[in-house]
Amino acid sequence: MSYIKVGQDANGEDVKLHYIDQGTGNPIVLIHGWPATYEMWEYQLAELPKHGNRVVAYTRRGFGNSSKTWEGNDYDTFAEDLNAVLETLNLQNVTLVGFSMGGGEVARYMSRYGGARVARVAFVSAVTPFLLKTDDNPDGADKSVFDDMVENIRKDRFDFLQSFGKKFFGVGTIKHPVSQATLDWMQSMCQLASPRATEQCVYAFAATDFRQDLATLKVPTLVIHGSSDETVPPKNSGERMTQYVPHAQFIEYSGAPHGLFVTEKERLNRDLLAFASGGTVDSSSY
Image (cartoon, rainbow, N blue to C red; front, top):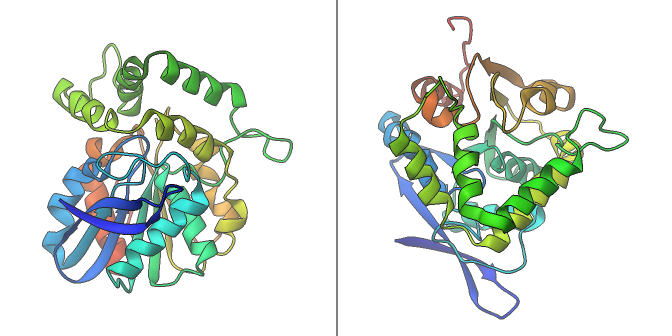
C-alpha cells in the first residue's frame, strides 16, 4: 500500500494517508465522504484514468488505512493534509472533487491556500455551504439531528452504519437501487474508521461554516446533488451553493440519493470527465 506523510501527531508519530495514484494526464483528486475511504470511488477510479487523466484519491486521517490520530479531526487540519498531498505529488492544474464531507476540504483548502495548484472544483452531494441551523442560517438542520447521530454511534456504531448505509443509497421497503453486496461493501469500509474520528467528524461537517470559504472561489465550479438525497438534503446544501458561488453550475440528479457515485455512476463519470477537460457539463439531455 502507498502512503503520503502529512505531518506528525501530538506524540511525534508520523501521520500517513493511504492513497492511490493511477493514469497520466491532468490530475483529478477525489476526496471521499464520511465515514468511508478512498475506495468508495471504485467506479470513478476504474473509469476516469481511461480518458487521459491522472486520478489520485486518498483516505482522510482517522479513516480506513490512514493514521488514526486522536486530535486533528477538523477542517483546518484536513485542508493542511490536502495541501500536503498536492505538494508531495507535485500536482498542477488539478480538478478537485469533494464528495459530501469532502466538499468541506475543497472549500477550506481553496480559501486557506488561495486555490494553489487547482484549476477547477466540483462539489458532489456536498455538505457546503453550512449544515447547522443558527440565527443567521435558519435553513440549516437542528443540532439535535447531529447529537442523535453521535449518540447512536456511541450506542452501537455497527448498527448505526447499517441503517446509515440504507439511507445513504436510498434503500427502502420497495426501492433497492443497490444490492445487499454493495451495502455490505460500504459498511465494511466504514467500520475501518476510528470511533473517535467517526464522532468528531459529525460535528466537523455539521458545525463548520463554509460560506466565507466559498466566497473566495474564482475557478470554474460544478455542483452536483441528488434530488432525493436524505443524508444531505439539497435544500440545505446543493441548492444554496450558487448564493455563495454565483458562477457555479448546479446540476440536480432527479431521484438520486446521497450515494450517487454508485447509483448514477455512468452519469457522474461523464459529467466529471466533461468538467475536468475544461468543458461545460450539459444537463439538457437528462
